[in-house]
Structures are given as C-alpha cells and as structure tokens.
Image (cartoon, rainbow, N blue to C red; front, side, top):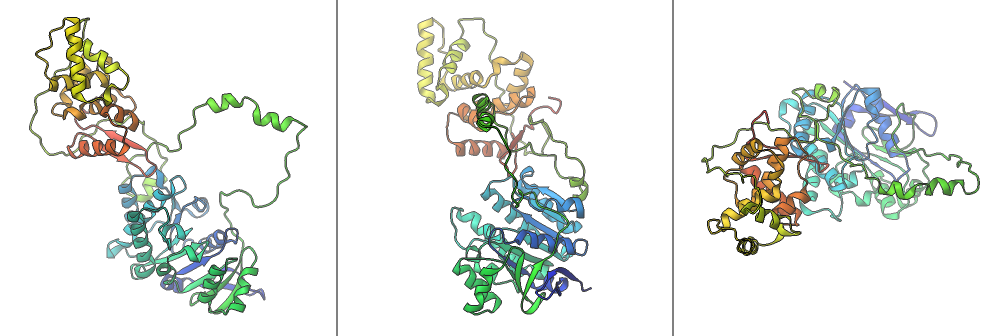
Length: 495
C-alpha cells in the first residue's frame, strides 16, 4: 500500500507531499530554531497520516496531547507510572498497535531522558510477531541524543544514546521509522542525524548549524544563505520520500493546536494609576505564607490487561496511604517476637527511655552514648536497670521514637509481631512504616525516615528501603515523578 500525505505548498503553489511508505523505510530529520515551525510541521504530518499508520510520539513539552481529542491517541502521563510500568506499557503499545503520546512534561529533565530511553528500548526489543510499522516521533531530539554529555550522568547518556541509535540505525527492520526534530543540528549526536535519509530544514542563524543543514541538503555555501531567510513555517525538503532535489515548502494548516501560549500580540490591560501595583501587592504576605501545592500526583492503579482499556478508563487515584498487599516472599526462620513496652505509670525504665528519645537530636547520637545516658539517669532516679543490656535498650529506644506509645495495646502487639527479627538499627524506621500502614496514616517521608534512622543522607535512607525490600518486609513503588508508595506484606490484609 502506498500513500502520499500533503504537508504544504511549494513556491508555485504546487502540492508538496511525503510518500508514507518511503518514509517508513528511510526516516526523517527536522531542524529549525525555536519559532521556526517545527512543532507545526510535525503536527501537520501526524494529522495527515493519522489512521493510516501507528504513531508513537515522545513529547517532552506535552504539546501533542491534543491529538487525543481529534484522532484518538492514548496519552501516557509518564510521571504517573513507575519504570517497570513504563516498560510494560511500551510492550503493549507495540502489541496492540496503539497510537500514543508519551507526555514527559511533568518530569525533571533527567527523568524525561531516562523514561524516554526505557520506552524506546522496549519498543525496539519487542518480539518479532509485534514488528508492525510505526512512526516514532521524537521532539527536541537533542535532549535524548546529545552530541556532548553536558550535565547528564554517564549512565543516563549511555542509555539514551543507545535507544536513539537503535531507533534510527536498526529500527527499520523492526518496523520503527524514526522522525527526530531538533533546534540545533550541532547539539544532536552525529550518528543519529546521519541515519536519516529525508530532511526538512527550517530557519536557523548560527553558521555551524546552517552549514551542517546545507551539507545535508547538498547545497554550497552561497545557497546555504537561503536557510537564514526562511520564514516561520517554511522548510527546505530533500529525500526519497519528499524530492530528489531540494524543494521549498510552506507547511499547511493544522486542525489541532498545542498547549503553548499565544504567539500574537495581545493588548495590555488598562488600569488606573496605582491599581496595577495594588493588584500585585494586595495580601502578598498572606499568599506567600500559604503552603505550595505538591507538583506530583499519587501514582495510579496498576495497568489493566489491555492497554486501551487501561488508559481509556477514568483514572481513580488511590489514597496516599498504602494498604497491605500479600506478596510472594521466601520463607524466613521465625525470630523471637519483640515484646512491646508496657504502658508506664511513672518512674519506670520506659519513662527514662522516653525522656532520652524526646531530647533534640537524640536519634543522631551513637547507641553507646545513649546507653550511658540511660544508665546514669536510672541511677539518679533509683530505678533498677541492670537487667537491660544495650541490645534491649536499643529496641526500647526504637519503640519510643517511632510513636508506639501513641497507639492502643492491640495495635502495639500486632506491630511488634510484624517487626520481629528486624535489625536493631533499622527497627525505628520500620516500626514507623508499620504504624502508618496499620493505622491508615500517610507514610513517613524521606526526611522523617532519615531522622529515625539517625542519618541525614537521602542515599542511606534509600539503601535502608532497598534492604528492607530485599528482605521481603516492604514493597516499594516509585514513579518517575519521585512519588514513593510503600506496602507492608507482613501486616494482616484486614489491617
């Protein structure tokens, strides 16, 4: 099957088209400075071939999500899914031939790059029976295939360059036709740009970008000056899917619009003298004191069995507080249960431990120093403490700082049994997690877990959670937006 999609008009008013079948085999590179009309060109191309071929759009600015309303694309909000879910979604996109927009605009730049790289890698690694033809459009490609490392760490750069190179170099045999758009050719990795056989070059002013564009179009230095004179929406096209000789094209109109701000001039609001200043400063201190909204939203439920059903249904956000869910964990030897501290009525060992725990910075002090303080206080108050060794003290201290005295006796017993066998240094943060899950409270954040763990290092807290997860005591789920949820298999399902 052959099809020609109309992208605009030439200088003499003739229609300029792109052979879709040839495009699938030869790939496309679009270049132009900001404001030259790259996004408009991509939108025109996507609208004209919608329904004829599967479309997969990597959208770092969330500009193409409006295609969903007119053409039925499925929008994947990348920030709402974990890395494993992104990989599962990519596999289902290839399996079900769904046209999708991977919206990355809610993520930080490095998270955008890692998410797109994971998604593209799974598209490329799909089983042979799912190698259906698809256009893979990557906007702002210089982010995902940079010519230089910049501030990106080595692992991320290796991951994203591998994914983009596979798409442009080896994707054709797997049905993937890469369409990459970039503001600057000099910032795009050469091995990615060189694999495209079709080019649409828009306005650019820097000599290095202009010369590279002219080289790709087969133009000499004098002819390259034309690139600088192009107007918004005008491109020079060349390639087997477009024309055997460079041809100028004015991109046609589109039916959908992006979510960016308007480009035209808008009259400024009229205000009396001093009124605008009053609008800016009225109740300013009160507004500044308000709590800023959290950018990320809680993660959604796991994807359903079918991609279209999973993404088309209204998304019901779960409560932030995780609930206990059973998981398969290896059987561990039954350790001795931790006896919860009895309710104190004054002058007891538990009271002394509680006093120490309430002191500022207590959790950051060495256990030996805390134990010496405990022994001195017991002697001063005439409380017998010889039967409490340092191991017993550390557990009593963990109970005191975790908030166990704030819950009822029955809950303390359940939580103490669930925490049996946990290492002394991890007991306090794990108890706090158990209490939150059992009582239906929000999970302690990273800062609170660090305080209970006695460390101000976020990486140590993450290693703590990883260790607890490897032991099968918790299940951690973290999306690309940084939102973390924790479930506790050790608690009864009815908790």
